[in-house]
Length: 535
Image (cartoon, rainbow, N blue to C red; front, side):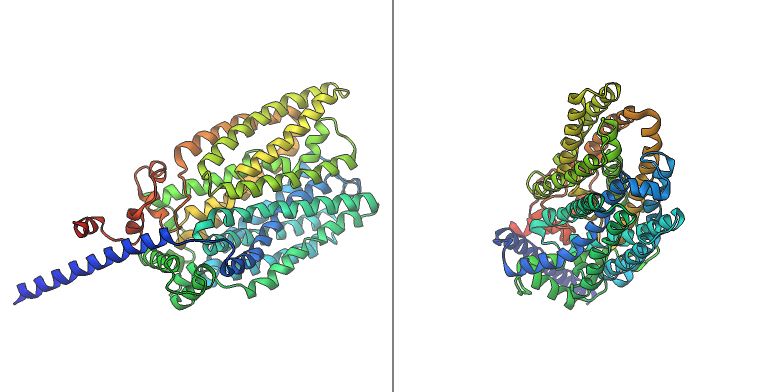
C-alpha cells in the first residue's frame, strides 16, 4: 500500500515538474516574441515616475559644480578667508562626503523596512534642513555643519533613487533608463555652474555665493512632495508579500494594464522565486548576506569597485577643482574660469546621454574598459601641457591643449562611466540586498571621494601638474580589475543575473548568449526535465 502511495506521489511530482518546465519554456518564448515600444502609454507613465527619482541625481550634481564655482569666487574667499587650493579648501569639499558616511548605516534599513519612496523623502527633507543651515552661514563652522547635513541627506537619496529606478525600469530598456539616472548629475551641475556665473557677474556682495546655495531647495522640495504620487517599487512590494499591488504596478507600467502580459508574468515569477530563496531584506540590520556566499562576494567586488573607481578615476578632481586646474593651465581670470566651469558640465551631459543609450547596445564592459584607457591617456597629456603652461605663461598653445583635453576627458568619462556608476551597482545586487548593498557602495564612494577631495587641494598646492600622473597609472590598474572581475549585465532581467554570479567564472558566463536555459535556471526549473520533455 505504501509503495503504491509512494509511486503515485512520484508520478504526480514528475507530472508537476513537466508542467513547470513546459510553462517556463513557453513563457520564455512568448517574452522573446513580444514587440516592445518605448512610446506606449505605460512607458510614458513610467518616464513620469522616474523623473522624480532622477531629481535625486540632480541634488548630488548640483553640489559638484556649486563648490567648485564658489571656490573661484572672490566674495566667497574673502568672506571665509579661504584660498582656492589648500587643506582648508579640501576639508570644506570633503565634509559633504564625510557627512554621507554615517548615513549609510541607516539607508539600507529605512529602504528595506519602509520602501524606496520613504528613503527618497527622508533624503530630500534632510537636504532641505542642511541648505537652511548652510546658505545663511555667518562663519565657517556653520557652513561646514550645513554641508555635513547635506551630505547625510544626499546619501539617502543616492541609495533610494537608483534602487527605485532599476527596479521600476522596463527590462527591455533597463540600461538606458537606469543609466539616465546618473546622467541627471550633470543637470544639477549645469544649473549650479550658470547660477554661480550669473551671480558673480551681477552681484558683488555675499548674496552672490548665498543665492546659489539656496537654489538647492528647488529639486529637494519637488522630490519631497513628488514621491507620494509615485507607485512603490514592485520588487519591494513582492519582498513584503504584497503580490497583488506588485502585479498591478508591473501591469500598469510594463504590460499596458494587462496582468497576464508575458513580461509581467515572467518578472513576477522570477521575483517570487528569488525572494523565496533569500529574504535578507527583512533583516534590516544584517549585512552578512553581502559576503556569506561566492555569488555575494563576487557581487560585492563589483559594487565596491564601481563605487571607488567612480570617484578615483580623476572625475572628482575635474568636478570640484576645475577652476584650480584652469589656473594651473594659466587661466587666471575669475570670469573665464567660471564660464569654462559652466560649459564643462553641458558637454559632459550630452556625452552621458549618448553613453546611457549605448549601455544597451554595446554593453557595460566595453564602455568601461575602452573609456578608462582613454582617460589615462588624457591625464598623461594634461600633465605635460600643464607643466609647460606653468613654466611659460605666454605659451597659449599649451594652455589651450590642457583645456581641450580636460574637456575631452569629461566627455569620454561621461560617455563610458557616468551612466553606469549607479546602474551597475544596482544591477549586480539581488533584490533582497539591493538597498543595503547600494548603501555599502555609497559608503565606499563617499570615503573615496572624501580622500580625493581633501587630498587634491594640498596636492595641487605642493606638486602641481605632477599630481595628474597619479591618475595616469591608477586608471590603468582599474582597467585590469574590470577586465578580470566585472561581468557583463546587459540583456538579462535583474533576477537572471543570479545565474551569472553563481557561476565559477562570472565574467565568462556573462559573455554567453542569454537563452531559454537562463529563464529555466532563474525559475529554478530542472533543465534535465526539459530535455526529457522534448524527447
